[in-house]
Image (cartoon, rainbow, N blue to C red; front, side):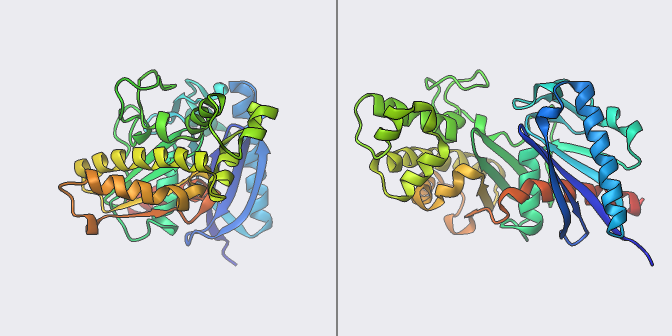
Length: 328
């Protein structure tokens, strides 16, 4: 009896590595996690991933599955054509690591590397809120702001590993200095880290909020999830914070749409769970700024795949590569 073909999708995060066996239809037939902190340096990272890939093979065989390829997503500046991680903000062991060439001798399958935000966009395009939209922008709101472009049904890779970085579009030239070194990036206005920073500054100046008690007791306990929860409960300061998020997103999206003529934008990430709070502010600002592209031709929607978007995007990356090889 023929074994069902699958690919391995890998989401390599700062705390955990998430793995999935995914068939051609995008069904996850097996999944598990391992801890990233067990891989403190480059050699340990490569050996740990190789050991886990061997475990994938055993798992696939036990389920009557046959692995065809591996797709791997990592946050940071990724050079897919070289299979190299130039810089990863969450995993220092990956910095300047030729990951694919190091893993290739230790694994029997072709392997493909991509930025995690690009894979979020690809996953949503394949099976989520971007399905059927061959031109789209994916935006992830979390600690930072990430982005990925789908053009003509493919991830747009560009060059130098910086494609789709909507979080680093300048909105306020004299604004805060972003972690990237620039001032006034979208990320400094719309990310979880910077929104929480702004809220803490307001509380320190005496602003009224349900978050004040939490802030006074332990400022470090006030994070993105607490801010989302407060906004959902109509806390006035939290709503003001998400008004800033929405307006900044509206300005940045208008710029990208004017540049590329994209009809679909999908927004996900854990900080985007406050969608019902910020989306009206975003749309109002977008409509003010979108002067040339018809409003009715653009749809902006929340992501549908949750934390699986990047994992499924990694799988789709692998399946696309397998398909190209088969056509050749």
